[in-house]
Each structure stands twice: as C-alpha cells, then as structure tokens.
Image (cartoon, rainbow, N blue to C red):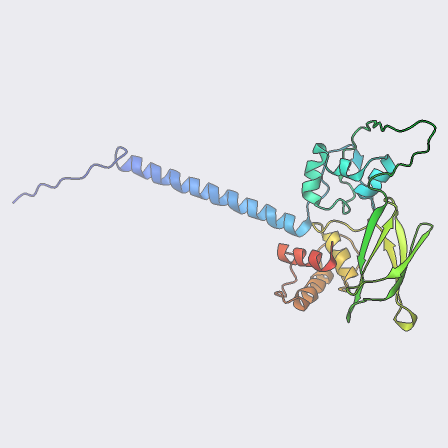
Length: 265
C-alpha cells in the first residue's frame, strides 16, 4: 500500500533559504551583543577612570581654577561663561561651575557694552554681578558636626569671623579668584586648623577627585595621583562599610555618588 505524503512548502524558498536566514539572524544577534559588551566596557572604564578633560574652548583650565575665578580674571559675570552655548558639553560633564578639571577647555565670550542712564554731575554706584563669590563649608569630626563653634577664616588679606551653625556649616563671601585660605574652628584643645586650597578639588568623575574627597573625610588613601590601587581600594571599603554599602572596594557609580553626597560637593 502506498502512502502519499505532502511536504509543506517552506516560506522563503526552501531549506537553504531558511538556513541562510537563521545564520544571518544569529550573526546579527552576535554583532548586537558584541556592540553592547563593548559599550558596557567603555562605561565601566569611564566609571572607574573618569572622563578626562572636556570642552573645546580656547581657555585651558589650570589647577585651582573654576568658573568664578576665570570670570573674575577676565571681567565677566560667571553665569555668562557657564551658560554660554559653546560651553554646553563642559557644563553637562562637570555639573558644578566651581569644580573643574585641569585641562578642561572653556570658551570665553566677547565682552559687550552696557549703558545705564543717570543724572549728570552726580555720583553713581554700581555693583558687579557675581562678585564676591560664596564659600560654603561644613566642619565635622569623628563625633559629628562641629556646630555652634567660633571660627576665623583668613583669605588673601581679609579675615572673617563668626560661628558655625548647629550642623557645622559656615558661609562667607570671598573674592572669586581667591586661591588659598586658613580656617580655624573651635578653641583650646579642641581647636582645628585647616589650610584650604580654594577651587583645588577635582571633579567627582575623576579618580583624583574621589581621592581628594576621601582624604578630606578622613579615609586616608595616600597621595592624590589619580590611580586606582590598594590604598584607595582600602579607603573605599572603609567608607562603604561606614555608610551601609557592600564593602567591595570598587569605585562604582553608587559609591562615587555617596562620596559626593557625604562630602557635600
């Protein structure tokens, strides 16, 4: 007895065509996965090692410079520089105009004239916008904030005195291009003295910026060399443990964000 079997047709022209389509799909999937892996590797490298200098302007940022000091030295209002369209990439990368990386490039816009009306033969007073700059600090030690304590801040040839608030914070108006200062907090045996490098901290996106902040917070990670090594890994483990995080010692995005939060900038 003979049996007639009907073989169903295969869309696309048969077995060879179907196999070719399967191989093509597999190759496309592998290529897509390879691209995703490469992108993930780039993100991981950027997360660990930072972005490096950014921006395309003609002005190269030096150590200790920020938008406020650049504006002061070039006769601009800082927001005019920071919000200039040519500095959009710099602004997006740095977020904070007071925390730039040496080597960043800034576009300095051309100066424009502004006219104000006033009576003749009269003296008129004008205030330069954006100057002085505001310095905000929070003083803490192992026991917590140094609140309600007297302080003296020496910047350039000026001296500021006051009392920290209950959370250990103080606020002073200083010249936008001030470089260094000396802060004394408390009295007697509990007195603390800090030598300040104003504008000298690198962005949190950079390894050096994390090292600076960890050192400031009391998690010693050695010289600020911008390199990942055993000392910064040990400091990160201590920091992570204190703040309820997994003690991996890795400089991941969550740890970087927490360091910035605790440091305050």
